[in-house]
Image (cartoon, rainbow, N blue to C red; front, side):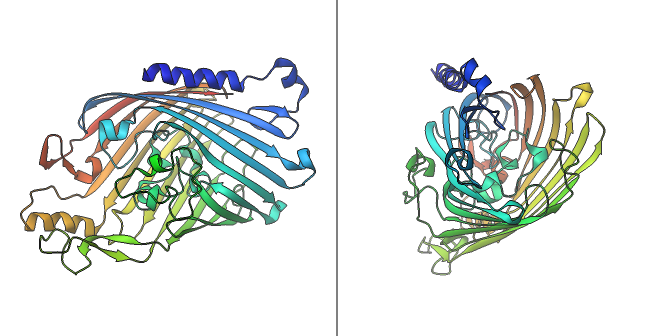
Length: 440
């Protein structure tokens, strides 16, 4: 049934995305997709992932998930004479079995498309460009589309190389990152995308809305139309500098990004109760101490190590840090390399990357407190994810096939394996998979 559902999503995308031949010839070209009318462009991408967990994790087995992502981009200068104004509406359809909760049990998502099966509105915004001076964007936004991004990580499949575990596990509802966008405003000063500049943004504090403690935020905001304004305010800023691109399609020779964030909502202590006792102490009141805010910072670096006419080798690194007293993950470090144009195939990419996430001191202390008060449990430490893949261009810019392997060391940072034994950690997992991507 799931396979038929994924196939149906793909067929719908094919039907919707294919324009009449005469219209494609008459209308001007779009940056992506095709023109419905001058100034109105539709692009669609269909992604299907298949995974097999060979050993370890929660269980061995297979999982498949599919995604249809359509963007409707509007140039209001062409359509309505409003120069400098553009807009976007994104619609996402997801169907299938999520590999992370069902197979690996890790903190890092195995796939960057996995989410609750549904059809949802994602981003929905207007943008006013002021040329080289910057731009203003407002509406329903997703921070992971612009902040802490890595160009050389575009073919990596694990979600942690996009919206990182450090933020996704910390912020209410996972924060404004896939699959949940939220109302917000973003200001860009200068040109942070291609030269030097600054991005500043504010978002609604919880994209899931006012959901219950045991409710999945994705279920509560299942269709992306909650437009939540609950959960306080999430502030995010990023300064970017680097060298200009040698050509329109070439990567920037080097880029540095320095970012920071602040959230004015409430966050629970990872170790102590409101009465000052350890949460693991049966004599405590069991109510976590509440902090009135949260904050953190990050650094992103990316550089071209080598290039010629048809090949290039890029490397990247990221680091995220935040207080361990109110966040499960206190430190995350990523790094990787991407080889564009290997073996004489200019549209292929080979990638290797690793992500390391460490549980904070308070979280580790809570586990030790459990041991002290008589509950046998592993003490969490850190999780490491290694991914290697090869993106094979069957038809450049249209169809790609990407075999991959992920090895997850110490899944969930060594949390208890509840299915087998509450006193032992989840075993290391070895995941192999295949991604197919079609663009229209």
